[in-house]
Image 1 (cartoon, helix red, strand yellow):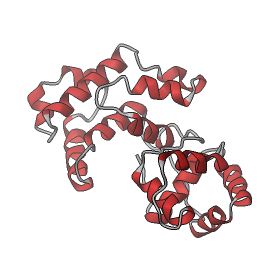
Image 2 (cartoon, rainbow, N blue to C red; image 1 turned 90 degrees about the vertical axis):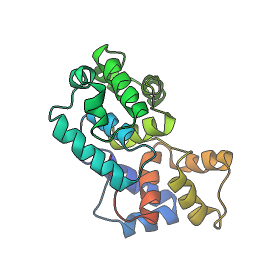
Image 3 (tube, one colour; image 1 turned 30 degrees about the horizontal axis):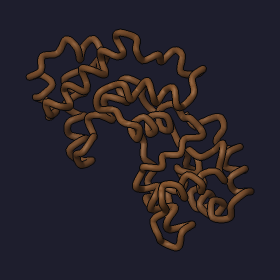
Image 4 (cartoon, rainbow, N blue to C red; image 1 turned 180 degrees about the vertical axis):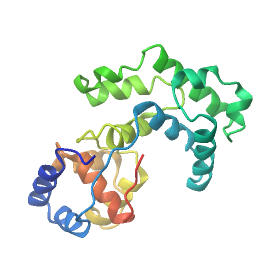
Length: 205
């Protein structure tokens, strides 16, 4: 599902910024697409932490085979050995169980997210062990399709801004924050195109 705001955002960004206009033209016909539901998306985010994409895909396939119905109750009920057999570290097993408990105990309020700010959702998600601000921001962009997330700690974003706006010099955190101001309220869209300039294949979470 392409975000309802996408075409309007793209038009505004292209009007404001020639670099962005060129990127938008280069990657016409592709857009941010949301896939998956919140719990399984967050599980996959934890699975993929600090391992290669190939290794993460292997673990994820084993998770899907072991847990065809990937719901919090199933993770909580699972034996540690069953989760470890999927290729998960002991630490990641702890993270997934904590995530599942947050969902089961309704400490994560999916039904209320539409009325919550980005910061409120990030605070809710980062209360889960193993979910940091960057993971929460990726979730807001790729799962919730929030339009104005600006993940300043993302290495890809830093590299792209350096390439297109800073003569190749990596921007300071403060400069990166200031750079993003020109693209409000569509910073997620700008981020997506800046990522594309480094890797033409769209990332999906």
